[in-house]
Image (cartoon, rainbow, N blue to C red):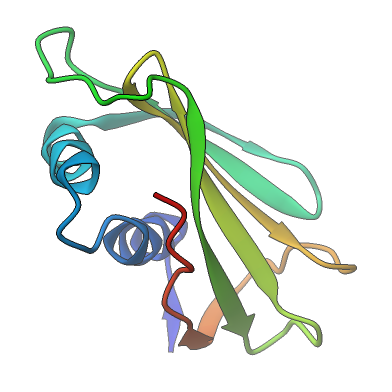
Length: 119
C-alpha cells in the first residue's frame, strides 16, 4: 500500500527515537511539537528540516548524528537508509538516501529495520 512522504517520516522518526535513554526521551518531546518547515528532494533521497520550539528542552551533546534505519521499499532494489541530525541540542533534519538508485515517486514499504543505537 502506497504511503505519503509524511507518513514515512513519522514511521522513521518513531524508530529512530525509540528507547529509554534520557536523550531519546527529550528528542521525543521535541518531536511531538516539531514542525517540518521544508523538504528537499536530492534525486537519491530527501531531507526533512524541523523547527523546534525555542522553549524545548535541549540534549547533550548538542551536535550529533543519530541512528540508522534500513528501509526496504517495493521499487528499490538495494534499499535505503536514514539518519537524524541534532544541532544545538535540537532536532535539525532527517536525511533519507538510497544506496545507488533514484528515490521512488511512490513509497511502498516492504520493511523498516530497527535502528542501530549510537547513543
